[in-house]
Image (tube, rainbow, N blue to C red; front, side):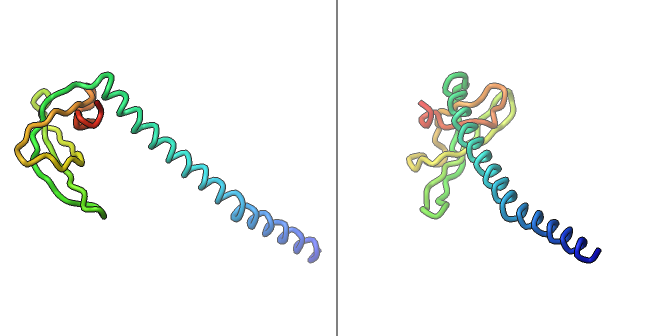
Length: 120
């Protein structure tokens, strides 16, 4: 009986070890790759959608800041759609506070917007 219990415990331990060392890393790798592919295609799809169906309007630069590890200049802008104010940003160092720029946004979701120059 003791020998049988030991064998059962040993089998359970082997199954647990196999699951922890083989299955979990594979699942994590699949999840990571799936997330990366989703992010890649969602950004690409947004760019395509804005290029084909986006609405072009004017926005005003409200702030510029250096940021990130490379000190890249980010410009922040605001624009109005149907009385609602929306914002966005880009990485164009040529803009100054108060400049008016052209942006493009999704008609059904103006929070998705880009500098018009970036998607031409």
